[in-house]
Image (tube, rainbow over all chains, first blue to last red; front, side, top):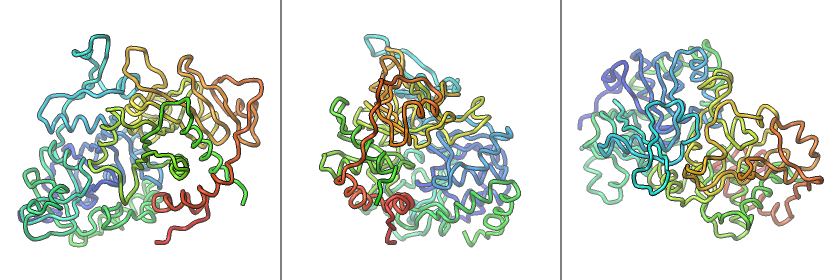
Length: 273
Length: 249
């Protein structure tokens, strides 16, 4: 698989797409999020898998997003996500609250190609009360009364992930973050930025193969060095807590957020990603 | 070195974990922003109790090989015995609110969101609710919205609920049969009256309520030594602030 440029990858994401992003500890492509901002993406719907972090706040602040479905939005130690909170308060985004295992389950249903899957719990939560797309049925296998929730299959238009490496075949190594495999299997398109390319085929290496997303699912690769920054990339580099704290402070105001975008997103050349 | 409030609360949590009247805690999971519960779990482990700890945000040696969904699959099967939850609001029926205040989805104050609580609270045999801030804005008569309910109708499948609520002022036990908290102990400097004044919900209290005991010398030695060693990587700021120790980068 021949890599494409990061900007070409961003250009391939249509306005209005449902874009799935893993949280800050699980290999989101922050580089692709920055490139989507540079290309002026609009009306995106974001899915947190299963929660949302830095990249989601950045895209919302830049005006790229109309809806977020997630189990939580947070900057971790740096606190609440300021642009998410502001957009919610001003009614600029629709927020569909979920709970972590529900998002995993909806993706697992899509992965299996079945229309829905059941999940325990949830009954009595106001999350369920605000999700008309989630149904409670009587467990058809139970002898007695046993209400259980059914969740619809969810197939994101685009999964935006950042892998450690891609090989010549387009297999992408994500280590133990196997929820990314479920996400990849469930999504219509996987767009993967990676730190680096490696020769050969990782699926021929027993030690690497279990940490791979097979190229079967991968539509395109773009090399983006430090493409998860400022969040961590497994044991390659750590979470840049100082930078995220600086972002959190600047993004408290619209003007501060604009200054952040100018400095760290818009001025950043694709080659520097 | 005087006893820090965090050390007292960690020791109190450890005693709740080991409570012989509660279902056994063989496998405990601890979420991201929970350094004091994590310290309590490590204390139990370092006391020699054979408990498996799964620390969700441990960067090196993360316990899960199937990604973040594995915690929920384990819990769905009943293989996680104890979990910790907090809340932007917690009410007198042990309902927790991680969504926000005002109208849905948080037109007043928006909290981060419910994370896995709507599942974990029902599917774990016991939950310890933990929130350092003990004030009428956190401990409310009724939460504005329910991320996860404290009690459920009998027909709803549920393995357990809150065992206790531990705050910076006291320890409450939860009694699901009557859906009420009872004051079990107050931390030094607090009284039934001061706790009532700081609590938005009504609760039960005996005539005299004991003081939350000090950690023993042995507990303090473990917390400041081997427990801190285990926590330095994941919670560097907490270890620096509470134990005065820095992670050697």
